Length: 409
Image (cartoon, rainbow, N blue to C red; front, side):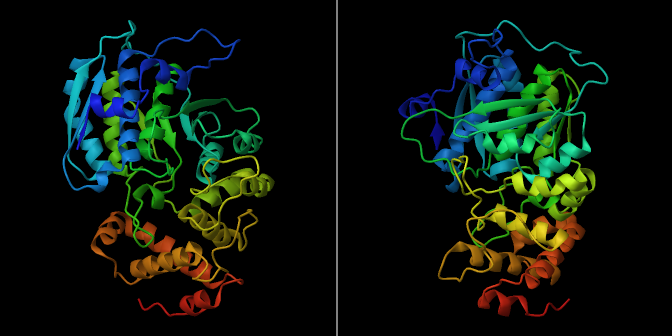
C-alpha cells in the first residue's frame, strides 16, 4: 500500500508543525510564548503520527510492502537515518516498509539542536501513566521528572488521583491526537504504541535538558507474547525496539541518549512488590486510584475498568498473587462470568493455556520464540498465574474444573 500525499489529503489529516507544537506547549491565555521545536524533533513527531495513521488504517494486516511518503524539514538527516527507521518499523510491525522523505519548505524552524546540549547531573525523565508499573517506577526514581502522554479524549480525573501519591513531583503532559475525517476508530492498542509514548516523551529530553528516559513497563509486557487466543505480539516495548530507538534518538540529538528499562527482568507481581515496599501504607491507595484498562475509551470521571480485557486480567492476577485479594473496582469479574456471557472467562482460559504451555514447554512457535528470550521470567509469571487462579474463590464452574487440571513438568 502507498501512503502518500493524496491518501493523507483524502482523510483530511492535520499533521503539521502547528498541531505538533500544541502537543508540547500550552495554548492558554496566560501561557508562555510558544517556541517552535527544532526541525529534527518536529520531523520525528511527524513520523510518529504517520505511524499512528498506519495503525488506524490497519494496513499492516495485509502481507505486502508498504511505501510511505513523509514530508520533513531536515531531508539530508532523515535520508541518512532511513535504514535505522526501517529497522525500527520492522521491529514493531514485522513488515517491509519503503520510506520516501519529501522536503517540506513551509514554516521551517530556524533553530536546530545544538551539540553538547546536556549537562552532567540533569534530571532523568520517567514515562508516566495512571498504571501500576509506572507508579512503581516513580517510587524507584524519586527525582525523575514525570512525562505523561495522553490522547486528546482523555479526562484528567484519574491522573489527579494518582498524583496525590506524589504531591511534590513535577509532571509534563503531552496531549496528542490524530485529526482527520472518516478515520477508523482508535482502539487504543497499536503496533506503534511504544513509538508514540517513548517517542513523544523523548521530545522532553530537549525541553528539560535531559539525556535519560525511563520506562517502567514490566518484562512480560515488554516482550509481549500472544497471551490470548487470536492475539498477536505487538512488540511495542520490545527490548530490540528500545535499543533501536535509543540509537535513533542519539543520532537526532548528537548526544548519547539512554532509555532505561529497570523492570525488564520482572513480572508485574514483582514490580508491585517494589511499589508496596516503597509506598507502605499508601499502596492500598495506589491500587484504588490506578487504572489499567484497555477497553474503556474514552475514559470519564466515573468510568470503571472493564475487568475482562487483557490489561485488567493481568492486573488483577498480579495483585491477587501478591496479597491474596484485589480491592480494585471493575465492571465485572472475569472469574465468575460463564462462557456464554462474554470474553472475560475465555481470556482467563487462554491465559491458563499459555501458562501451561510455558510450564510444560509446549507452546506454538511464535510464543515459544518470545518466551525463549527470558525463560526464567516467563516461568515465574506462568506459575503465579496458575497458582492465583486456582485460589480465586468466586470462580465459575468451568474455570474451577479447568484450574484443577494437573500440570506435568
